[in-house]
Image 1 (cartoon, rainbow, N blue to C red):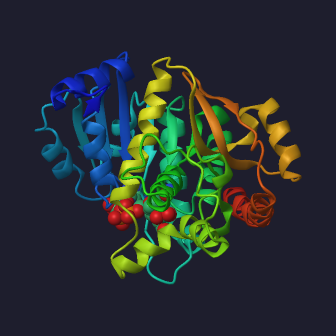
Image 2: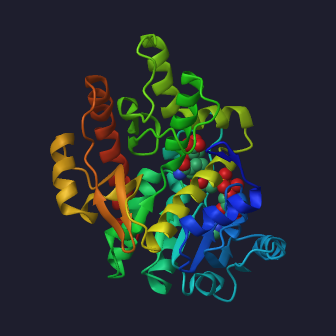
Length: 358
Ligand code: NAD
Ligand code: LMR
């Protein structure tokens, strides 16, 4: 790593990074679906964060093995893996500060994310019930698809148990942000994107509900970029998931890039818990989490939405502020308009399911 023409060793960089980033309030992180394609690499990454001193792993298969394996890594987190018998879910969740949920079935080629709802809706409902009854104050990070519908499920379950705090429930849309930065870096010819290139992506997490705000990119696109290239970039960000699903050819969807993205978002939450100010990331949250921010955003959207992914400022208690979209282009306004009806339908799917099942 070079800084000011100076070369420092990896050890020095790691030490510096952690001291700067983490004043070390220790947290317990839990992964539900920890033996899966996302769950395993995500758990590995979480194990490398020294601010995490306890790591709980739950899945319906293989967690004892994954936990034993990770427990040999010489970082602070004590790792525990449990299966459903003997109240394994509750045991793992006890005392959790952050719960990340990548449990559920992934897509196959030609399948839209909404088709996963039938199976994943029930899985998320059961896991959310476990959280609501064991560690209701934990920050919940939902990865399981379809995110636009599974986040409302978690909210409804928490309401049912009288423990709902909209500031603490997040749909993870970070992969869209990561993809947008990567693809923009490719176009502007930068060797790497993170952490310099930041492109806000708003709306939700599926197809047309994914709205990249390229006009707000930290690094503007070339002014002479042909309009077909621009449109292709927007499409690529919206349908980046399909690219991976196709390439994996029946073996699932994005797992490694998702683990990276989930880790990025979890780290931001941990830094916010630690009192670091000004941490902002797009996330799919209930607009109830910030009434003032919601009023402004609703005016911009020209529609009522219970949930939306916008830039969210994080603090020790969760959502501090939901940022408005701000200045966007007319093309972006059209993308937002196209996202709204689908988002409304997706949100309703989650809520209706709970009204029937809870
Ligand atoms: P996977 O099949 O590899 O892993 C899922 C894991 O969940 C499996 O280990 C399975 O045993 C476990 N599981 C199933 N039911 C469970 C239950 N009731 N309790 C606990 N664990 C349970 O799938 P994956 O590739 O890891 O994807 C997981 C989910 O994440 C999918 O729904 C996928 O669509 C979604 N996803 C979301 C994003 C995003 O950006 N939000 C990105 C990629 C994937
Ligand atoms: C993604 O964006 O990669 C995930 O939502 C997985 C998928 O189904 O595409």
